[in-house]
Image 1 (cartoon, rainbow over the protein chains, first blue to last red):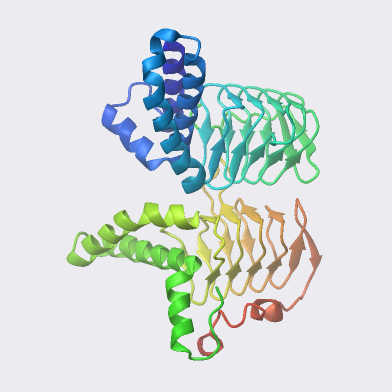
Image 2: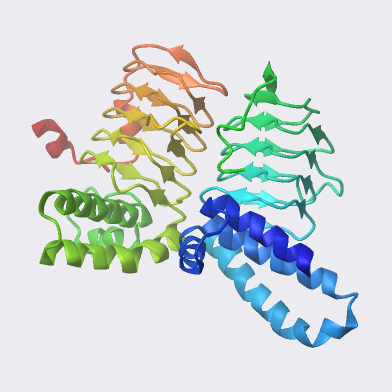
Length: 192
Length: 191
């Protein structure tokens, strides 16, 4: 329970940008940012999945799943952001814009970012990509296959990644080529 | 949606009511006017009304069309946006007579505030991404699936990911006309 609270706090901090933001500011950001709403719905779903092993919290489950279903309809069909529960996403996840985002069957580290129309993993592969910490995934990028992406890598907009990437690499194009090693993406990661 | 060639009232009405691209464009023009008026005159009855329309219409239109257009883009006349949506557009300017297909992103490079500029009569195919401090020249053609992060000269054709120039001095008037005079030729001729 407390673990999930910290995770959600990290997600919100990523969007709000302050450690001690006022409740009003946080609520305004949640209302404004559709990506943050999607992440919160995903976290709720993951929490409900975990609660299955704690019989004391079972009375909460029906209301929780109902809320999750409602949120899922808005987020998946309204905004077009699909964060499947099969994906394992670390704290501090940031979704930019909305529309056509699909994150399934994969493992993402801490402080990752995805842009609009990105596809990470696919429903056909049982084992998807394993993405490290602090990876920036630009708009329209596509990462498929059972591959490993090093921490601090940057996937440029429109890149297609189907092979392993080293740490701190900048990958561009289709098929994705590593054009730069040792690229520092801390400037472009929003408030990581 | 295609603008009907003849003056059939019913067909025109259908376009006005059902074209989501037109809806998004209308909301963008309202936001643009609101930003201009607000900076010029502050709060008046007109700006209040425009603000109300934006506040009520923005989220439903974003959900229906999956489009997000910034309010501060200067958009010329006769611009066509696809009805299939998924457009995230944040350029400095879109010239008149430009065609933008579905699933297109135009925006800044991460960590760099310089916005792209799209010229007049540009044809942008589906699944394109244009980002960074770039200028797309007048009459350029960007083929489907291109990822453009460098300047495109006027009347050039670019394709690929990353994009390269595949032809120069190409006239895309025929290509733009295939959408059956979305651009009113009379209005274009007068400018």
